[in-house]
Picture 1 (cartoon, rainbow, N blue to C red):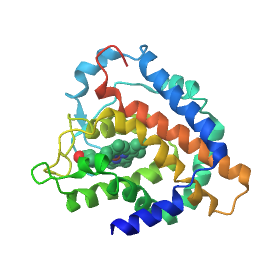
Picture 2: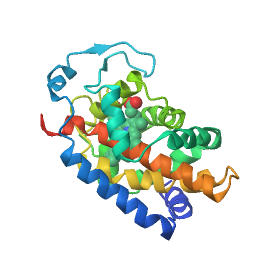
Picture 3: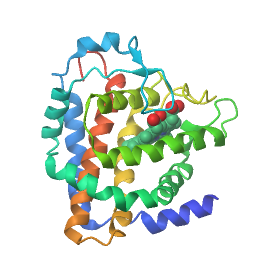
Picture 4: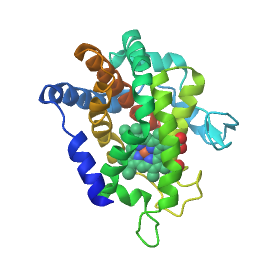
Length: 244
Ligand code: HEM
């Protein structure tokens, strides 16, 4: 299994040289924005964990409400140079990526499985061994997330779902959905680091749609921005009150 994953990776992990500079820019932009986005309403933070409501988007019913409104989202999108063209490009990617979801997940899971400092977050806390049930349960939600990201429907429900995903990586809610016997938190630094491999490995799948090189690049850039946007929103529970 391990070698299967590694060979998949070696096929898909090639990143064009031309992509490296823009990717580096985007990551630097994220780190900068992470420390300076103090204008979000942090008063809402205190009530985040008290407010839960039932929604159909996820498989559990104990869901949280985002401390952010659509206006906050718009400001963040503008700061990421994320616009209508990106929304169109994400939606263009949906029919290309949807039939390839399992292959995409094989690559992403392969990367995590072959990287000890990452796979430990799916490990049984007592034995240190990867928990297959937990991995399989999360994989289904990951598949749904690919579709959700490509649909690019930015409403309050989407924002609330982003907040929930952040909490599920954080100690607030990790393991709770699957009752998993795993470690209590995905550490912040890896959440951000994975923006690069997740988006870089997507490019070959986008190319398989047979679109022009320009369209593939537009879809790829839109995915980079969208995943970065989400990783920023997921960071909220990790940042001290008043500093997000
Ligand atoms: C850009 C980076 C990442 C993306 C796009 C991503 C995506 C996702 C998604 C979509 C889910 C399912 C959320 C749900 O319950 O609906 C999830 C859960 C999870 N992810 Fe990530 N993730 C990222 C980074 C990481 C990293 C670095 C790790 C560490 C290996 C990690 C480990 C996990 C774990 C353990 C869960 C299950 C949490 C739970 O107990 O509910 N993720 N991730």
